[in-house]
Length: 446
Image 1 (cartoon, rainbow, N blue to C red):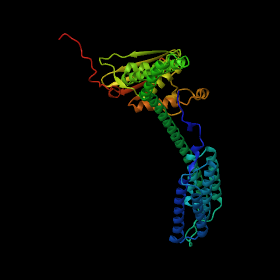
Image 2 (image 1 turned 180 degrees about the horizontal axis):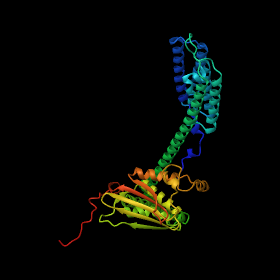
Image 3 (image 1 turned 45 degrees about the vertical axis):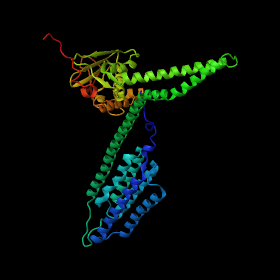
Image 4 (image 1 turned 30 degrees about the horizontal axis):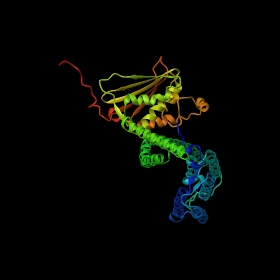
């Protein structure tokens, strides 16, 4: 069963934009706008409403100061708050462009920046609204603006065809960059969620492996006080067993103390067995342990061992390998019609486990995306019906690759049907005893 982190169900925190990020970007914009106005007005001596431009820049700076004082640095804006702040940036920049030539101003392309920021972090509906505001501002600037600041002794009139081209360029850049940023952000978010889920699954498996050690520690700590209780109970039995008022209570105390001692003895025995015999597992025993929980679902699981002149590898118990292979086998059992075949082979260099089923196999569109979070081998309609997200396959692939394995996914060659999954490790990753020492000496008469 795949374990999903709780934040996969709570999307509210995901769309909260960090306020400090916006304020830093706006301070950079304030500095750049101020420098541009100073250079145009005093470096080139062009005439334009310099005071009004600085007033708009001051509004942006004032907003930064207000937000920095009103909220802590780590504050995250909700989607509506972020949309309001980004809308202000669009309107402020539109005002500056209106007084400095409109779309003839080469800086007009910066109108797409707030939309790109929104697409990378905000809900789609808010980004669409901000994009509509930006497109409306660009359209108005195409028809209404003050002349582009230029030398006073010459007139520079931008052809309307060039204005139309600038409008198309800005709008298309806004749409393309916003869609691209949204796709990249969505994929990064999915990957981050899946990796966190992987860590949670591995942590759960490691905790389960550590329970035996905790049981041994508890048995050791409780052994001494329980022995004291048993001694006291025996002494009380000798002294008061003939008294009918206390005989039953003393017998109950003795029996319960003996029961506690038996429980602690079993805990200690189980822990010792796991520590000694289960810390290292031969490859065949590992496969049987992984397959055992999946034999009760009406699908025959056949294990085939390859021929080799080497002893089978003996590896350490690895929760990641156990969970990863278990997930692959579970997936094969889910889609198989009647049989799953697990082929185990090894040589001096490699250990290979191949899982084949006789089901429908991987769909062509899914086969190219194996291992991508939230994908599985069912069609989109089937996924919606079954509710599967394919996260388990991603987790299995990630855990197995962390153990040093390489995985390949394919369909069985015709006329056979079904999926074919191969997992391969370098032998030293799966054999703590070493491949060289495991070789069987050949027999002979010489």
